[in-house]
Length: 95
Image 1 (cartoon, rainbow, N blue to C red):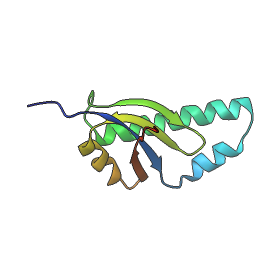
Image 2: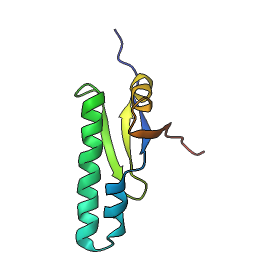
Image 3: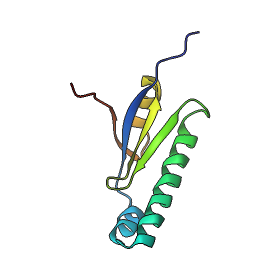
C-alpha cells in the first residue's frame, strides 16, 4: 500500500481560558511559560488522535493558539472532528 502524501496544515484551537491567562503575561518568563504550555498541549492532542510516527509537528503558534503539522488529508479530517479544534487548514503557497 502506498504511503499517503503529507502536507503542512495549520490547526487552530478553540477558546482556552488558560491560554488567555498565560498570554496576558507579557514578561519574558510569561512568554516562556506560554510557549511550554502550548507545545505540551498541542503535542498531547496529536498523540491522543494520531498514530505515533505518522505526523511531524513543525511549530506551535503562541499568538493564535495553533500549530503547524505535516499530516495526510485523512489525518486532517480526524483533527477537524476533535472538540478542542476550531479550524484545520492546508497551507497555501502564494505564487
